[in-house]
Length: 190
Length: 190
Image 1 (cartoon, rainbow over the protein chains, first blue to last red):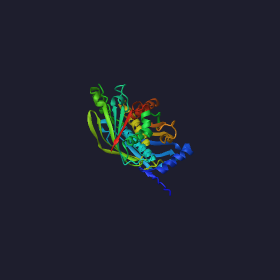
Image 2: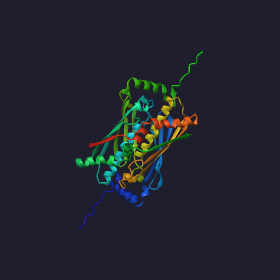
Image 3: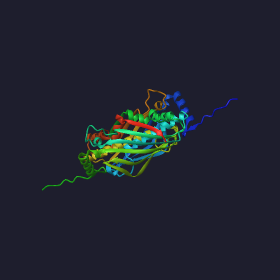
Image 4: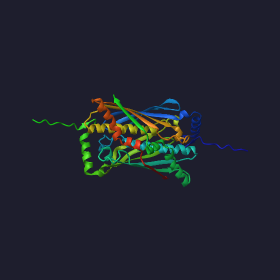
């Protein structure tokens, strides 16, 4: 008698069967792994502007999201804004937290590891002497970011530690932010 | 006879009188320039998670936004998500666009330059061979990001070009992303 071992097709809310199909498809046709993400941003006034997320290229196709997503930005009043939305450097922390979390959850799923809960808190330090050009020794951006994860999973301590390392190991935003990205900026008259 | 020249106190929606007061206050008490931004992120399932933006430290105080702002994240279905929100690398583009725009608008205001309109479009390239560990020569993150601004302002061409350079010169997110940031990640059991 043989017993068929049934592999779950959904772990952590990730369709692992589709994930492995994607990997096989990329091995067969490497070009479909190339993605191009994009946004359009519109300034309103002062610190208020918003971005629209709609189309992207990937899997060899021009694709669209289910609907356009609009992301707002503003500054708190102490930074001369109207305090109607998160500010750009807070959005950056969200991008990092979201990417570390999704990368952890997807790669844990690929390894068959079930995760029950994930929370994280992030803090980053900025000294306005940089932005305001008051001290050339102070950078404009974050001087450092601290990320603290709390993970609930029915695994031994050493495996919990390995789960915690999946985010930094795989996350596109973590890689972009820690290693830097070439960014070209052009401007023309509207 | 002398003519008093009235300086506008609001340019581009930025209270320039308060901006100069802030600069004077920082010169008098440099410690108030230190800001700490933070978010809390909660995983839901799969690619779905959300961040809450609420408190921050700055100007020597513990401060709160007018209300907590909740930022969602998800992936499109081709990346095994539910397509309910922008994904982390799209949020990163929003953070960059928003910061470049606000930095441009604020510093133009400080120089007395009025801007009528600003739009930008951003694109970034990612090859999934990195995230999926299919090719160790391919990075996980963005290989490059292209930002194209369109600016409407009643200024000569050379000044328009200078306005376009204000974002890259001052933006905290541009600096963070192009030069890299030290990010520490810890994980403990929930």
